[in-house]
Image (cartoon, rainbow, N blue to C red):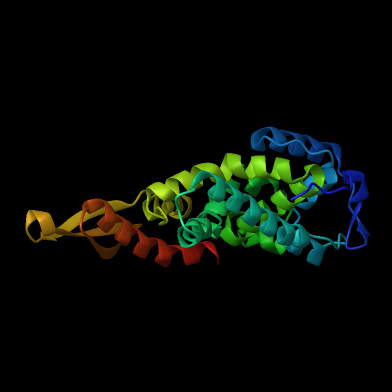
Length: 257
């Protein structure tokens, strides 16, 4: 995929509207973000646009947002991730590669990376979205990640976008492969529980059965005083993952409210 032939100066507007000027304080924030994310934009306006949620354009005179960049970034992220998988896992077939890809570009993982990069602090939101906890919403954070990748592609080309994806998605690929293509629900639940309840999940073995070579484990997990499960598995790790998934699925909806 070739780099865009245009320079950042050729992207002064979005949808026919001129991109807004950036004040000195915002420039400092964008400069600090670039260091955290290991990127260097020639156009700060494009970088800033990637953080502009549609709620801002709904409530202010600024009638542009990051949705078009999100659309582009989704495609670039998909291509870059597929490239990494194709090059690094030559023994895996198409179905296996597709399973890995579907997990590593999921909303949960993208939102987690966004938090690591502190994108939640960079978002430009409308007042209503701010009050409703928009900075903590997984969908919003994942969308901003994709918009950032789209902006980086326009600013610096596919090669730099691929380097960025490799830096932050590459470790997730390795982790997902090690875990047999499944989400690590224990880690997801721990992060969610800390954010929502300022507490950690507590796991408890409630039952085990069967001979040693065919043993099954039942495990419950308590989150914020409520018990979920039991999860069942042939070992404690898989049973804990099942219990964590039940608790995570039940509690993650609160983050979207």
